[in-house]
Structures are given as structure tokens and as C-alpha cells.
Amino acid sequence: MSPLEPNTVLKYPPLVRELHDALRTLLFPQLPEIPGRPELLAKLLGTGISEAMYLLNELHAGLKDGGDVCEFGVAQGATSALLANEIRATGSHLWLYDSFRGLPKPSPKDELKDDIFALGSMARYEGEMRCEQAEVETRLAQIGFSPERFTIKSGFVHETLREGDGPARVCFAYIDFDFYEPIAQTLGYLDRHLTPNGRIVVDDYDYFSTGVKTALDEFLGRSGGRYEFTLPADFAGKFCLLRRRQDPKPED
Image (tube, rainbow, N blue to C red; front, side, top):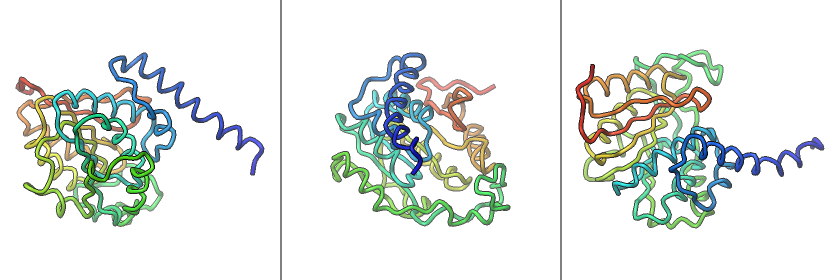
């Protein structure tokens, strides 16, 4: 073990707290302080801290409507635990969707844009990024989040996200499905169940697979101006934010 490693381990949580406080002061002054947040930010996997702060800001804005919280594509559950901790004092239920079998077969609309694993083709990503459901359950148990407060839907989203068997009222959703078809299906469901001030964050917009951007662009094109679309600051990562408009405006 390098002699620098212990110092790095000890220093990392304070650096996370420092970044959290800076972002909260400069970008998200309305974001409430929640006990345990910095510790869970330090344990994130895949989701950057800056992106997570955007997620939390959108989450709390959506929670003003009441309704449930969804994460589509939960992987190891580190972001799930972060979201769970934020809604601990609310009446919101947490819905978690993941195949736990890795990525599905890509569609013709999923062209390889950024070869993140250097696999050489989009087709070779089928089955990648597989995680175990037990990891998610363990992380939620570690923060003392009651099993009665969350539902895990295991399987590809076309199998698990169905009317009458999912959240009826969604105030916030985080989508990290990577490919066109699951994102398009999820956006269609959310459009029918999102609260008037509901928020959606979609990861990997214009990154990795072209299918993410295509699904978003098609969705917005037929939404009749019901959503405000924004991108984060460049340093925060590759994702986009959708905010339901209470008074839809015609698109240009």
C-alpha cells in the first residue's frame, strides 16, 4: 500500500463536504441541509458529486408537489441510498428499476458515440454494467431506510414499468438507462404520471450512445411545450434536466 493512500482516505470526505458547501452556496442556495448527505456523496459510484447536487436540487424542487421518487437504472444503489436519505422525512415512496442483467440489446438508434469500455462496437455492450440487486438492498439497509419505503422492480423496463403496477404520481425521476428504447418507454410513462411541477434528470445526454439524445429529442418534439429543457454547467457532466411546465408554452 502506498504511504499516501491513508492520507487520501482521510482527506476525501472533507473535500466532498467542501465541494458540497461550495455548490450549495453558489448554485443551489435553496437546497436544504440534510444530515448524512456528505457521507453518502463520498460513497457515490458512477454519479459525480456535481451531478448529484443537481439531482438533489431537482428532487427537492419536485418534492414540493408531493408524489413518489423514481430511479431508472440503479446499478449498485449508491445513488439510490442518496435519494432515499433525502426523502426520509417525507411521505414519498422510492421506486427503483434495473434489469440486474446488464445493458439490453441496443436498437438501431443506438450508435456508439463514446466507447467508454473500449469494446469496439455498440453490440458488444449488451450485458455490460451488470450489478446485483443485493447490493442495492444492502446500501439501503445500511442507512436504515425501511423496506416498506421502497420497491425494487427487477427486469428490463418494458417488462416492469406498466400501468397499474407502478407509481401513480411521480414528482422526481432520474433516468440512467443508456439506450434509446428503455429511455423512450420510461419518458412515455412519466409523461402520464408526472406532477405539475415534476422534474426528470436524464443521464448520458449526447454521450456514449446516440440513443439517449434521440429519445429525448423525439420526446420533446411531441410534448407540445410541456417541458423546459436545460443542460448543466459544463463541469457537472453529461446529463439534461426536464422540468414540467405548469403553463405549457408552444415550442418555437
